[in-house]
Length: 230
Image 1: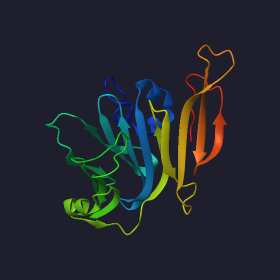
Image 2: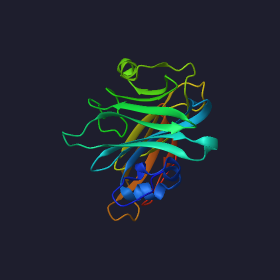
Image 3: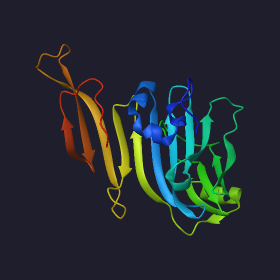
Image 4: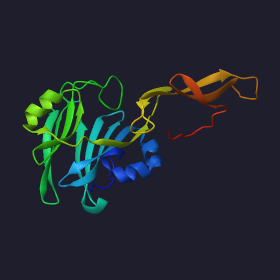
């Protein structure tokens, strides 16, 4: 796996290191979206980690497949460069336990709408044994035509999702609290509220976390560099 070096976004480091080093991500001023799926790859159930990152210069995509016994990872890393000659469509192959695993992506018309992960007009596909074992994005028909492979018989399971947001006062997402549960709307908002205390500006920073529109956490007197994991 590639190691950190100057000029390489934190999301291009190993997924394991990224999940354990929140400080490095914070210092880099990046927003990061990481989702982990479990599915059958090369005759074994393995974890596939999809990581998107965004900073002031570029977007990044990293696809990692768990190796033998959960140890080494095989990783495909893509920089979404803004220059017109950058090819926003491609593929990469690596060998996992003697079997070929192919990553296909098409981000030519991907719409991000200010988010770290694309919202529409894209696909990212992982293929093994002539089956699409993981497919993300709304261009599913295009993905099947491009790969020439059929859908896998086993549906991937979303194991976890992590998001690190930089430079936003309000953030919204959807999540399930257990596999068979329904989707919930989660919003996190930081705001300044008038205060008669000893604050120099007369404002006190605070944070509200709501689930399905209901306030569940209210943090008053928010301190500088406060971090929360949801």
